[in-house]
Image (spheres, helix red, strand yellow):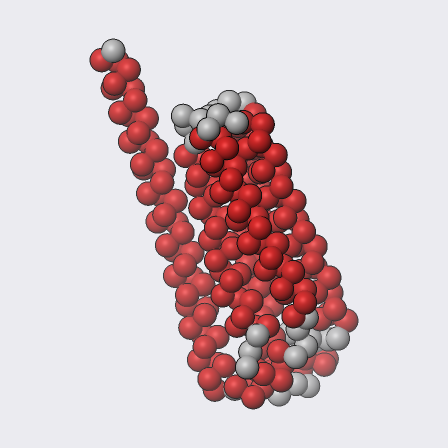
Length: 206
């Protein structure tokens, strides 16, 4: 009995350390994007008309669909944690698959959206981009940099959830040891929150 208590206590400490490490990492990510949002705000203030004009080139419908996709994916990853806690491993796995599918859907939509911008020469360094007003050039530079960085986080989040999926299959993550899935869920919620800020900043400028 004493051994069990000691083992369980050590397990709880490991879980707490893992959660703390994840929260610390998420904090650094928030600082990174917070700095970028600050830069965006300053340049938007200095080039309000140019930013507004440039935003007309973005596809609000695609941006809205991707917002719905990510919001739904946050729901599925949260439900997967609940399912695993209740011992429903099969449902948890299916919900993780659904989340990864939503991640891929987001990236596919973003691919087509970016492709349209390339076709119009709006990517930094292209001929049409170089002929634009400085404010519009800054808008598209920030757009590609910030949404590209976010897209990278979507890929990392999807890969992380893939590893979690495999760990659940191997019973390394269970209804009594699910901190790995919780951390994966926290990271995915961060991805969702960042997009919730990116979407109105770039697509809904008024």
